[in-house]
Length: 113
Length: 114
Image (tube, rainbow over all chains, first blue to last red; front, side, top):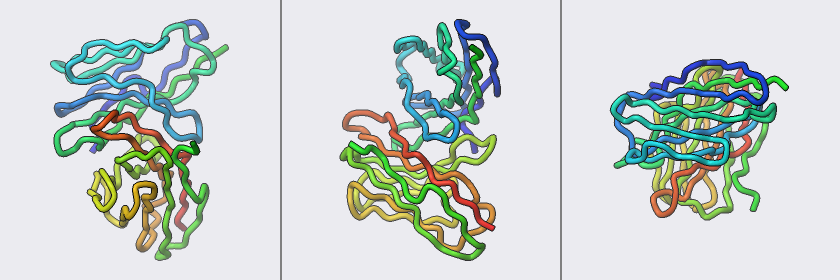
């Protein structure tokens, strides 16, 4: 079963705007990761946030984690056409399941030039 | 470094045929995983390994076998292909608990079973 539910399923914005994607999950986690997938390609790791962290930044990316609500959000600021891709959250439950990622269904982001 | 490599890139099988999808990494990663990606389903874990000689099942293991005889290689075997196994298959690797759980993905194998 899918652990993560992502919202929205698709997002269309203009270059320069910010894009926010949300992820909810069901069980407790050790960490949550975000990945990007360009059409027809493999996934690329963007950022990892641990369960004891609330916010993390990497360049134009900002990730928040609310373990009480079992949710995370990914914000991409000042979007570019090159950011057009699918974005997935993935949870790692830790313990005996370290390294076993459970992915959400993804958000398709389209950035119009 | 080549990173994570997968062969073949494309494959068409008839129902009942068997084949092996190859995956190799040259980063000395402990952890390796196989996922399948179906339209609208995200990625689902098939099997994974935390080191040579150690494998475990993921969410959707039926119809697939794996073994890990070396750190570098993690082949996925389809025992008797079925149309339900039509999918894109991704191999991934990571350092694991020692350093990081960030996973590095291969380019994928697109499999069609007729």
